[in-house]
Length: 195
Ligand SMILES: [Zn+2]
Image (tube, rainbow, N blue to C red; front, top):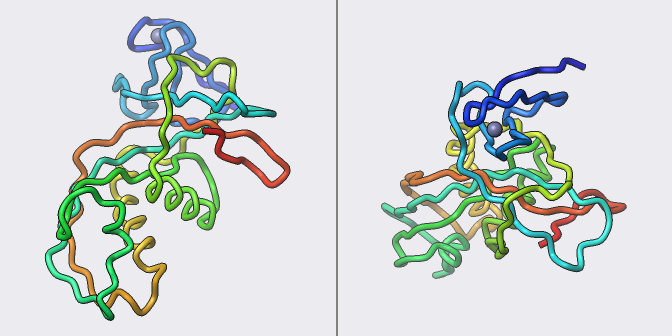
């Protein structure tokens, strides 16, 4: 396994990495920066585990994309509301929403499940300042990819109700993208959210 050594752009401490994470965490000052991005320091958030969380604790990285959604025209059969509009905050023609993009490596089904779960029900949590010894899954999706995937997630969520949506013409504008680590525990059937 290749070991990469870099210096923290914030405090100059050496950081050693053994995994293919595109994000570097400095153990000295807790700064996270991007491998390809030179010295770009990322703003990030770590969610607290539920007090009842049992077992191996793992943090999974997500890009939380804050986007404005504007519907230019629509054609919906039977007067059904857009599923999407049930969690967009704003008027019936648009609003703002948080779209959660999983940043760690996973298969398409899991990606869709995670993205849909957290986008339709945004997690509530208090934050903490460090990972507290919990594992951290490597990130493979970068910030720019996340903005593009946000569009894909929105379309995927709408497409889950075939026949209802006839046509949707919309604009999605990304206002802000923040790295968020959400807590999971490893169970018999894989990683489960531990919020
Ligand atoms: Zn540092």
